Length: 220
Image (cartoon, helix red, strand yellow):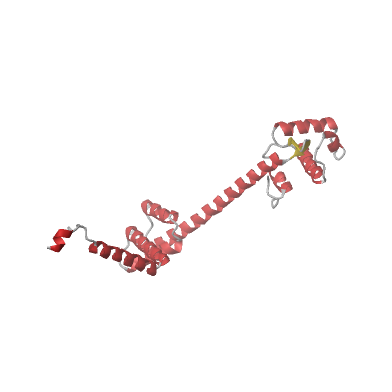
């Protein structure tokens, strides 16, 4: 069922055309929601006609269409028939989630393109030439790995300072920095303890008598 934090009316108005609902169906759904919220569990055409300009015959047709297309439902609750808009609300919530996901993807794509354009511009300037298609593809690969534009540009500057101009050298710099960051995150203490533990195990193995000495040999 749709989250209470998301306004049903807003979602319905935003999506009713996409869901092929006409204005009579839209008005009927709003009135059904209103009557249910007022404590009317079972909504009939007669009840709706008291609140709407549509006559009973017209409303019957609307309700039949909504029911057939799976927007509303009649079900038994404690041996009583009740009307629910849960199917409609579930579909509206899915539409909301899909729209939200598309918007997030659009923003992510825009941010990535902005990041890439910044890198391309800086690389062209620092290298004094335009990037080749292979180099552009390599930069896109770095960004897909999660390197920020600042890190990538700094890696190029570091590489140039060491007298190297190839993206292969920049790639090695990024890998070196990544390994360094991993070590810092793990902590030198943890690494030292691990090394000491391995050393202790090696010494213990070296001291282990692998050949059983016969007791008679010991007495000789």
